[in-house]
Image (tube, rainbow, N blue to C red; front, side, top):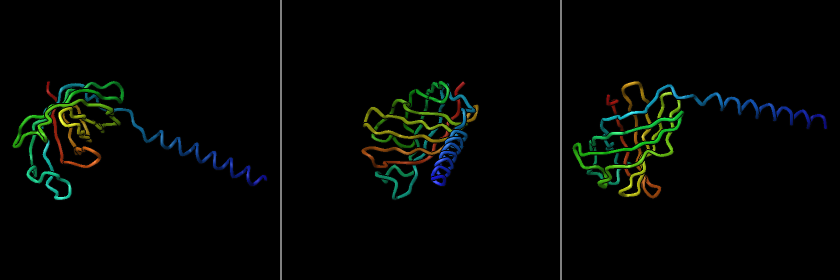
Length: 153
């Protein structure tokens, strides 16, 4: 019986330690992304990632207007013609359920024109940001690539 109690206490201590370690991994935001950001996105050319192969290397001009409250981020997204039109002519959307941890922002954009969503993951600094994006519809990956923006003053 004593060994069962000892095992239970040890298990409880390990669970508390695990919860503490998980809490330490979360970082407060080290950057404020509030403002307007403009730049470009470029679609990757991997055959397994593109539904529409004609969009290989497609460049779009993008902009975000973001409002940060602590770690939460909301705002708007706009896309304009670069070397090609925006995918499915989806040129605007809302930034929803997004957050900043340290300098990493995860921006989820819901595109109203076709019901798809894109996730923009990347790091921000005071005047620039960039990373990777992934666009989904109906549970499938439609398009992916990278993006880079600069703060508009």
